[in-house]
Image (cartoon, helix red, strand yellow):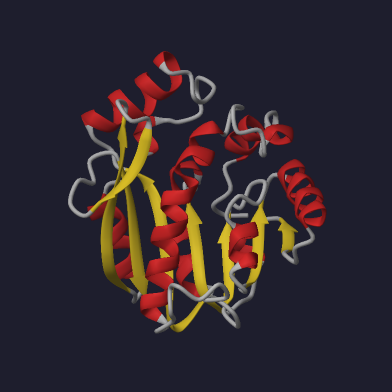
Length: 239
């Protein structure tokens, strides 16, 4: 389990029963989920020439969600027709994900463990809000790319390491707005786009798109921004 940081797993594990509580410790993920789902779907449909308006636009695609938590991404992917697998090192999160998915009548394959233990290949590999919690970024990126089939895509989302991300991602989110428990993030583990791009190229993949994700405190909404990547950003890569 090369990239799994056990301290991070223990930190998240204590809140695992609250994954589907929209006002609980995972409130920010619920708040940004509609926007990130729309972006992810668009990236996948562009890569595989699918119709975004199709209710089963992802049918037949084999997708892996690394660090799936309680299944916030896996369930909508399943509704869109994907053959979706979610993996997480937190056993409690996986049990919550399985129970909720069964309740929704959806089909998702959940696995408790590290991404390094999987074989693949997958058409799409998702690593959303997880790379800032791993023990070794380069090793994790290598695993994500290995699990992707040639011609497939890998989508990362994470926090940039900037003064602005410290102010908003830690001070505001953890201490002022109290969206997440204090200590959820370590600013030093945030990953700059240049660092992530370097790791991607090192493992023979290509960066296809970098897009920012912004939060507006006035409207209390997240939105996609093509150029502002100072705090949150998505990176789509092709193998």
